[in-house]
Length: 255
View 1 (tube, rainbow, N blue to C red):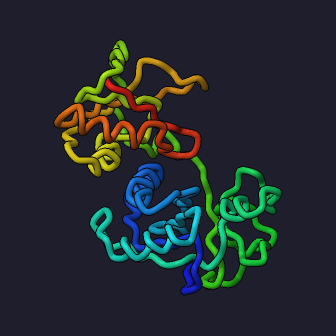
View 2 (cartoon, rainbow, N blue to C red):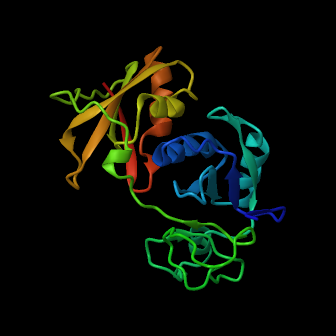
């Protein structure tokens, strides 16, 4: 059991479409739930135990409750969402409550804690490994989350062509926006989910950026078109510096 009726800032979601890429799933969940409040973490995994499930961590209980009530049963990738309060607090919540909190596992491990702050599976790491214990039923334990990157052979083939230059930015509002510093997982459809919540959205086109980011990684950029400069300005003001995933803030400018 990973859910409870006890109010919690963390929501447990299941019945997710397990065919969706993990990073795309996180971005889509962020796009859907960010309208209800500040999300401080999204925990999902492609591991066998966590397929079709995710945890959303909100900054406050009111936002989590509003999101649960509004989105319960909503169709998401052709399947209705099943949402409940998680039965334990996330590391992100415990850190926000206590700046001195130190997770009991490695600093980069993801996972959920029981209410008393102890690991729910003593002796295990945060990695998803085959269960060697004799018991079959893990229903009373929280899910352990892995956060490994997908190997290249598991990723869909992408168009490696890139424009030779970045469009010039302008200061006055225009109907076209330039989005930069996009993770490699971002596609036209993923970006459209973010922008189509704003009136006048027409299309989004994602391509590889000719420039590497400061860390030397290859990134993407996109051009987003609206019906008018006034409508695009609303979207720009709302989504400039939007966090697509941890460590990735999208910049949005007029072109």
